[in-house]
Image (cartoon, rainbow, N blue to C red; front, side):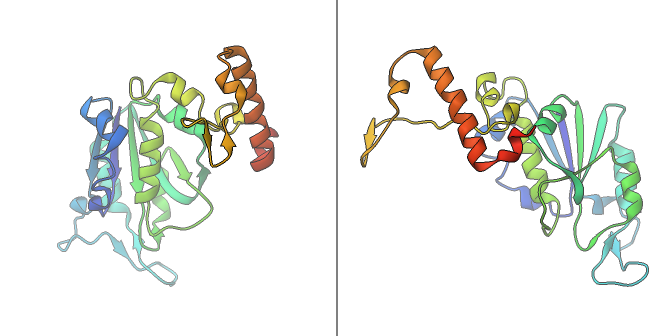
Length: 221
């Protein structure tokens, strides 16, 4: 998979993709990630990419031209262009699975007060990572890249993500490791039994219990 991130602040990504699973995925060529500063596409002599909003108002608005020209230059027949915006569709695990099947993703990180409405016309999806406002789309881009990359073949084991929270609309079951007893808290006996069928049943029931307690809205699905 190839992922292009359009951002005015590529240095914000320093270190994020240079550790742990994401770094291994990049080193193993499971994913190729590029950071493209769309200021480089500005036709303004000073590299200007924003201007004041028509009709007045606070802040500056990202202009069409640099982003349009950047997309035209890198987009292919296999590209999906995603605009990261608070007004987008709420991001879910099912979307991560769908996007992990794409060949080329282009993520547009907004900034400042917003972007010219016409930029929506060149996007395939609009995604929000939550009902709150950030300073820009860089952090949402990190979230998408992390959640998608870990689902690519060979990055982690299938069992690891099949049992994730939100799979089948359930939260994950509780897990334990050594020691068997810590400060009076014991590991459930069923996990020590070696009976894999009973362990499976226990984990399923625990997933349902935890989801009912913490996210009953998921069970409605």
